[in-house]
Length: 329
Ligand code: AMP
Ligand code: MG
Image (cartoon, rainbow, N blue to C red):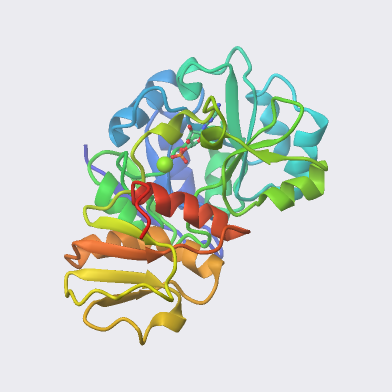
């Protein structure tokens, strides 16, 4: 498949250019596009054969459901049977933004979108390019992260292209993704909001709106987020999470790299230093980018600092521990 590219300035998206991409979605094509979290690989949620192509392009297991993206809060009712009061409050507080809400699926939403589940996951991005694309397409867009299954999610056009060139009809270059890790996934089908995947919207954020909330998914007995069981976010390099940077002995190995906060830059001697910046949000924005850069630089082993388990740090830890296969040193 020949992939075409269009470059769009997120500060003032060119509607004519995005109309072309929207036409592609309407015709059942695959379009990769930027969002504030990571690049997404999109197809019309209501076109079953188009959605099937997403799974093939990514090599994604067919029991891992997709998130549908909308441009207006009201469009949640195109996908969900109903919107409970607390879910509505979350939508008003955090949409457009990095929050995916799981609700009861409407019967006319193709089963393949939800990988056979009776629920559906919905997000309204804040990214100007994503929003305009969805609006012009006139349909919810099912879109997982635009990487080959198992690899770190792409946060730049170049990384999206590296995985998706020749596999999709079109890629929209909208620059870097500002958040850098995927959306928070919250299950709103029960009495209490349950976070199945941590992200930039935190448990405290959800409790502040709903008065209640908890972590679930892989932390619970029966995982409800099917994707959680698969290999994730793995570069070719071997990844280790570093629990305590203060006592960590830096390797003298030119094929090794450290990902850590700037204050450790002088401690890294004899190996490569990749800056995680000075804050959890800077680290989140760079994590997937740096894991991919390690492969580009020929690095064989990556040692990445585990941030504290709070706020955005929880999301970084979740992704990092998966890419390290749980190995903490
Ligand atoms: P990705 O599309 O790569 O950002 O991954 C989406 C995540 O949301 C995966 O971990 C899915 O398993 C999860 N997900 C999507 N839809 C549902 C759903 N209906 N119920 C539970 N988890 C879901
Ligand atoms: Mg993904």
